[in-house]
Amino acid sequence: MERFDRRMRSSKYIVEFIHWILKELRFHFYYKPFFHRVLVLQYPFYKSLSEIRKKKFLRLVGDHYDYFEFVPRENFKLTRAVKAVISAGAAHLAYNLPEESLTYYERILVYPDNYRSQITKRLHRGEVNPGLRLIVFSWKGVVEGLSRDEGINLLLHEFAHALWLENKLQADHYAIFDSFAIQQFEGLAYAEMKKMVNEENHFFRRYAFENIEEFFAVAVENFFERPQQFKEVMPHFYEVCTDLFKQDPIAMN
Image (cartoon, rainbow, N blue to C red):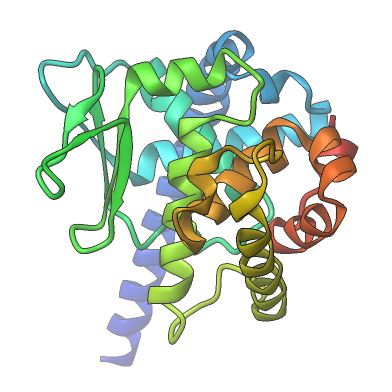
């Protein structure tokens, strides 16, 4: 019986090893060159990375591409390129975060344009539904966010919401962000939100002051989209964001 068990374990390891080899071959000879071609054209951040960082980034894109179930809505044509670009948004934020990041969610819904949410009954460009473990995007909103550098990026915004909620909901199982950095961010954010009530021309758009969750998502957009300006105008926020994401976008560019 013991010999049989050893054979079974050995067979299991062999099967797992073969599966890993096939997965690696598929990544290096199919996914990697495909992702590279798509992201060079459609994801500006990718082009700014060094060759070493590009390799890690592509690997993370592949992980999210394989992990999420992508679901088209309203007859949207869901192509491999669309899935790659959305996966790049996830990789962008999760680049140096724990490997559990975003695993709380299972599906990504993609609409062609703004859509009417079944929850709020209002038009949306994107949303996160932790109850159903899904993230929703308007593809038009994604493209518009990637085509300009104004601190408005739907991909980063919604994935930021997803990470914030996941960090709260899964606190008993794993942590996405350092707890001290989160406390620092919240303290700074609440103080800034009070100060901003009478400030007409703030660096953040007014939407940031809806609540702490929106403030975080807008801060993340600016941290990655306009890092130099963000650091100059709000240095304390920039510093705490580098602690949260374990990234310094200025140094990476």
